Length: 232
Image (cartoon, rainbow, N blue to C red; front, side, top):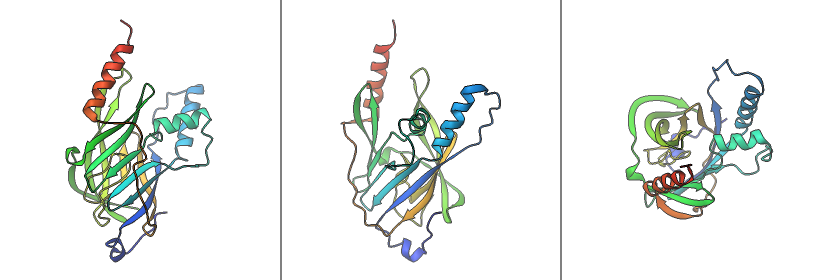
């Protein structure tokens, strides 16, 4: 259950830690049978145990999977859940200098993919709803994905941000909005605020290693290396 704070306290927010959980959309595919369906069911059960942490202050934020979760990371279904639901990714946002860094790995190499927040496009809508007792507004953005044929494509994401919490950060790449994102709707799942601790003094540093490159540079490297690996 998320903690609720009066507006007077929220206005004084300087730092804190937010924890998010994964809520899955109901699987309507009734044609799955046998061990394949069992594997999916077990992966979904593991996904519901995942928790993500957003550490933030007025200058920066860092988002990643919570350490020391009560799951067996050597278990096949746990590993699959972490991979499928982006538990192997980290994000760092420098709010002062207005850029975001995403951790990406490809063929054994680590990259810090840097994006300027002014290049992140959001469509702000008037639609609103309560998320953990906070009034949030809807915003539509884009996320890069990779197809089964290793082709890069864009997919729609929906962020629910809270102007009452005036720090423009949130889970994964949901940053740069006029308020903290408390719910992020992705394909097949939502990442939703579970707990919020404003009273914790939080120091935030970039935890991501690797060469710093742009998204465009990363896409170019990805396409060239995939092409080189394909049989001729």
